[in-house]
Image (cartoon, rainbow, N blue to C red; front, top):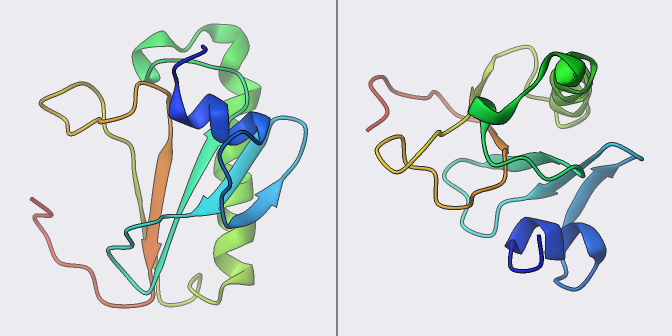
Length: 114
């Protein structure tokens, strides 16, 4: 999508502090971190939200979760724990209409979150 900020980040039109990239996904540090470790993982394929996932996207979703686990280990937050957040729609707090996962860690996270 031409006006999607995450698609512009994927294409390189907007810079990011890249954490990981392969042919399917991009992970980068959040510009407004809510925890000592806060990065986002986005698929390179544009999808609005989890509502838009299709059966053929199952392997992509597995890949995202596996890479989140790998990155969390690399960042040293895997032992004490971390949170994966996916917002869906306005009431869910989704501000960018491109499926993405926030990963937060490096401190004790409280519940409920908001």
